[in-house]
Length: 427
Image (cartoon, rainbow, N blue to C red; front, top):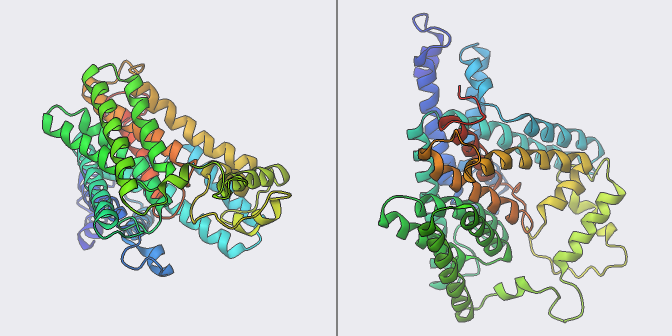
């Protein structure tokens, strides 16, 4: 940090010099590594501590980067580089809508807290990853770190569930948050390895996908991984990759069914449409209807960012409130609309459409100027993005500890376009 300040303030180094940029990039790369690997540990070992939830390694890394960035801007050094690392306009539009929704929130403190964390990760996390990925070499490094994080999370979950017969999911205490985490990372890491040149990488990719599906404890995880890998198989022209994907999914599903029958698990219940009484619709889908009712009644203002829990009980109407909904079992799409109104949902969909178009055109080969060397990254990004969109149906990608991985996928889509030719200008 002292070296960074000295370089930025020194008269011998020009304002936009390589020296200042190099030091910032080194700091960003180190912090990005902490954030990515730290995401595997979620809120462990102090999961119930609110302070630790706010300042866990993943969040702390982004916060440190924001403070460094603010210092750089105040010194008027490297400002142009930081500006070029900012996310797309749609991200800012979504953040602004959430800020405005605070005025209509029942509890202003909760809304401010939620929006602050949202802005910190969406903007601060985005610039951190964007600054850290400054070359093809660092792009590959990030994929390696993601594989490490996923392997750590999946292995810890498998050991906890099937060795110690724990009800937890490794470092994640909740099946739905864990499901969203692996629902994003498994497709992107699995695809990256399966499309690698060596047999060893393909075997590693198959092991990652199979292990992740077997460890899944929720419908969201299984659906996200399956949908993402099948999407990859549909758009992938290479038959060996298609065969690998299909066999991985078949083995994974068979392993999941087998392991679930050998342990005391409620995984099968997650696929039910009705409660165990066989009469009432499952609480998850009643909650979905409640959120639709909120969106209809409060379509302009919403409930306020992060404040849906204060209102949803009033919008069941004649539907039974069964109190069987588990924590974090929430439809992220509907929750976004219920909290931030129609405008918030539109802005969030704007983010999705903008990055989906780039990812799809790269992966499908429609962006002809994408170099062959970037095909592997493009397909991995597309699979990860599809996984995120599907997982968001069952547990929101915007939860604390999960959002940072979703933001990373957005940055990877942009950087792949940047380094291998595309529509994004590479600064």
